[in-house]
Length: 164
Image (tube, rainbow, N blue to C red; front, top):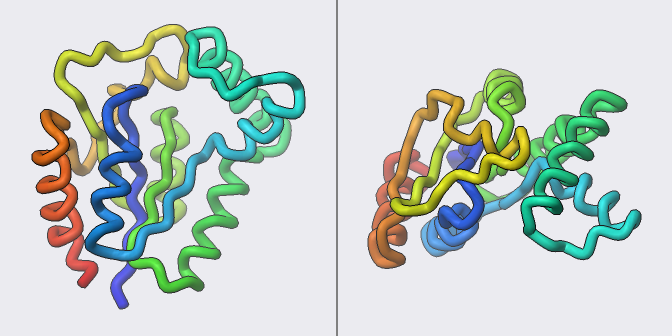
């Protein structure tokens, strides 16, 4: 069974999760975000799951602090990669925003990188993580125009990775 790990990125609302859902129609997918553990901590200290600029900056700053303190996000990604390698999924998506973290994960786990873009959607610039989305040279870029086209792109992407 072929397995691939893809780091996925895109500004908020670009269609990353929808793309992952479409790929899951064609292969078994594991979906993981580098900020999952950060969100767990944020909830413990009062974050309500919001996606305002203030919420996004809070999560970005908290991720930076936990990375500096004990490399929590990268360690959680490492654990998830081990789980992926030992399960039946064919394709793992890892959501990472920051270019230096993308590069580190790409080198550590032999991944591909993918940017989802949605025309007419402005990049979020109120925090470092979101503002850095376009600051990386991705292996693949997919333009999200319609749901039908995005699903077609997902099918082509899975085929290109030769996971079947």
